[in-house]
Image (tube, rainbow over all chains, first blue to last red; front, side, top):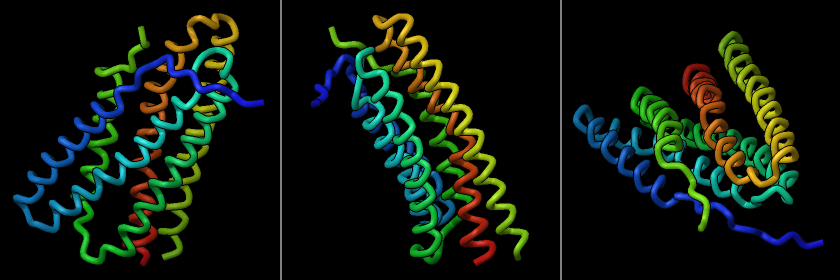
Length: 130
Length: 75
């Protein structure tokens, strides 16, 4: 049985991504005042959050509507587990592959992005299509 | 050195446990309320999405700190 995808909600993914990328660039520029390595680490820390989060938003809104409630919840669980796994893998990759890394800049930018993303979702909510 | 790995595993384990409980409750309530009022499914999904972002904020930071402990402090 094939399940039709219904797009009831317009997800402002592009707007969220634009605001988050702007915040990453601003934070990276602020960290660049300390050193170039800190700026680079801050940018990477922001990307570690934004990429899994974008995947989570995309995956969670794959199915919509009451008919697809079961698929909706199943996709939410899968999206969350993949998001946490991706974050852990990205952190491990950065700590192994990126040899000189400014850890405070990386973790600070990551933490700021986590808080900012939650606030952003409150401020710019997905709107229903009319 | 072993204590660092134990600390990292406790951080990841408790974070995963709390997120699992939270998401279980959230998903259960979403299914329940969607079954009760199917016309509200769209708005309920949006609210669930917003709450999911708040729910996994602290475990995500925990994962970052645990990876730092494993690969930088212990490694």
